[in-house]
Length: 102
Image (cartoon, rainbow, N blue to C red; front, side, top):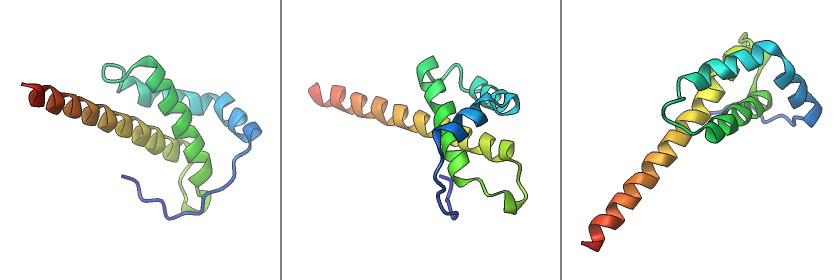
């Protein structure tokens, strides 16, 4: 899990829309999501991309020397990895319940 040491910034809808309209940002999001295409549903991938962008805008600190796209890659990957963990947990819980029935 990514440890966030920065203060959370308020992000307006306008800022989010501008960042989403940026071609570099959408390319990064699509590139990261392509790695998870076989593991997560299309709807989940879209949610991960939007969630990653939103959190990136909240926590990105340009004074650290990173580009926004570098942070974006990390946050979208983090969102996808968290979704994979949730799915694994749900599958394991279902397996345990089915075993208990027998």
